[in-house]
Length: 282
Length: 330
Image 1: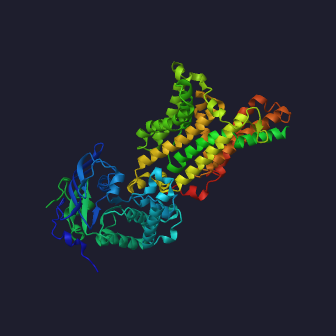
Image 2: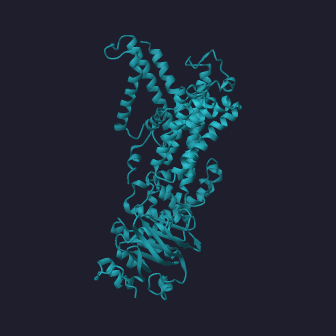
């Protein structure tokens, strides 16, 4: 059975900041500057629920900074971010994860001197045994631990990491670490998964498997937003593409049309004219 | 040469009071650094908190011994952790290191101040606050115990110390195999990863700082009890670094590491001390090379040499695993 996930976006206009029928994440007037440099200045963005949205742009466009702002790993100078109807202002990053928005990192953060299975177990939220008062009373958390472990083993199976279960995560290859990080993020049981360059440093053999896993997230009803440089990946799996340049969103649209967008071509290849401010909104 | 004396002194180092005090302090550091990745260069201030918590409660405030224990082991270390941790645990690891080393020196210098004589006894410190402790002793003060190694009161301190060490080691072992301990290790490996998975890294670090500080306070308090005095000089920065040496020697992030390290450190210190002294006395060591007054310094040189060789040949410590250490870098 194939579902056309992009159907929900058919009626959406292709302007930057376009309204979506069912946004899971909405941001308005988000600004972040470092000293004199305005890294991010996004007027409005809505991310549609249940689809895969790609965030692309040339180097230095502010993608990762914007990503950090969306997940509260960084605080904006101004602006609002609303996730599932909740304002994220002032909420610490770890609480955002508990709200159901979980992220991965551009430089994979596998916990090297912990086993693969412990990496996975860590991802489960609301663990009783993580309270200091109960840590010394194993009978209060043994059952939950068994459930968490069962869920972790299922995911390891799905991500082809079962054979590495007891190994230190530091012994995994670069691609396996990407898989582990994604699997670990799923232990949080998120509604929205944010992937920061999931394909960076992954060999071609593993690429297809990673792509399938990302599509799998959508099939399970999760929303995916990812930052990526690999245009093949963007074309293959995204339902919607958001393009950033110089801290702003310059275009939005389905992957087929975005490659022909004049503003996008200008941003990647350099504008034909001198005016940098003409961001080509038609 | 009196080989029996050399042997006895070495054993006293391996299992005696210094081993216990520094073993406890090093377990605290292991909690901080080994499991959570917190750089605490001021364990001496937690030890001082234990010592002064008890002695000030009993001597300056006239409170009961048991209340002094609670103040020294729980209240003082908790307050210290909050003061040092609240502003620094959100920042990079180096900030805690700076604040802890500064706090330990500040505490020592303030405690030494003549204007606080009434409270801290200034540089003479406070004495005779542990009579209640020795009254509970089942050992007779005049007799020698354990093949004559320890006299009565010493034996009592040592027995209580062993029991405390065993309890604390078991406690740390149990905590570190729980999901709580797993979060600490995750924070040590990568704090941002832990936060991205919904863990409140700040609060877990605070808990680790408090617990490790309490273990240090326990060591410092026992030391004050063992000598019936708490003096500022007992909490100079060297004290912190002795605990660090014990931890690194034994093996970081290993349950038995700090205990084994403390035993070996004081075993070797005692052994070199008495062996060198005996060699000088019996004339084996010619006076042109070394005399009796230089023994104290030379044994630290030997310890230093030993540490340097360890760092080259076995950087992971005695109990550590080399493969694990190699995983440190991504």
